[in-house]
Image 1: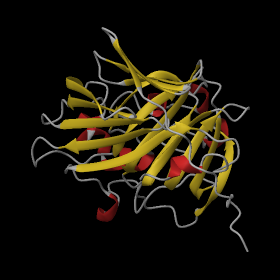
Image 2: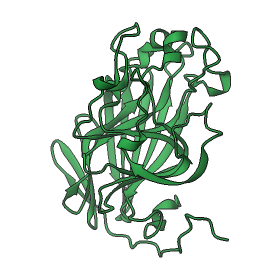
Image 3: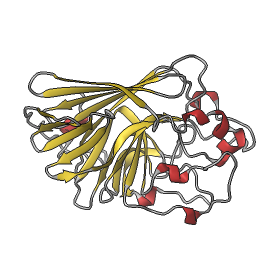
Image 4: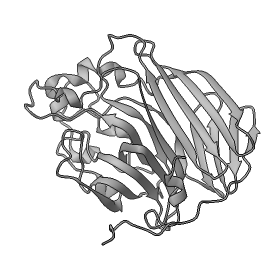
Length: 321
């Protein structure tokens, strides 16, 4: 009996030469009908085009914070770990290095300095003539006294039309590293709006763990896919993730009506997010295995064109060789 998400093998895509257009402010790499763009002032991925269709609305950036939960407020995480709240947005580009790797590959390395302990964050992009973009993210702490990280990942914003979500991982409901045994690995799909869990007080929600791949597409099946190496933790919203967060240090009387869907799809792609805990809501942290010490760590994933039906027609992008 075949697994429900099995699809017949599809031959690997042909490779094309990678053409670099190195303008004053933007580096554009093109292979066949796919192109990616990098802002040379920020070092960030700002464009991913399939033909003339632009997918990205806002650039990829480091992300170390999660909207605080009721448990987080109870244990004071919003205060003790607060240095990480704006660390991703305040990252400063130290250097952006670029080089051709033969005729059919190109590498871009963006090195950032973080405002927390003079730590470093390095993003290495490898664009292939087969049309995929491999992304490796490395965090290097500046010292050994830094606070725990709420999450280790990146965030990117897509255009609103890419609001259909499909993933191979734990689901279908939200799950976290310390609350995922009721979520079974499978192939799931639905709207991005449908992944939002409307807690009475807005807070972190909708995450998925042990995700092998996830795609965000329009109704025609066009869009972007992220493939973990081997897994990612991920979530998507129709508003900025920051809209879920408490603006201050104390719990405010916020309500469901404070969250309004906007003309965007926020996509969080993480190595992991700290556990949500729950032994008590008045002081207990998540258990030690589900915390994220500020130590050197890396993770990788692949951006590639999304598929219309699961893996069918796109198997070549799932192999990291």
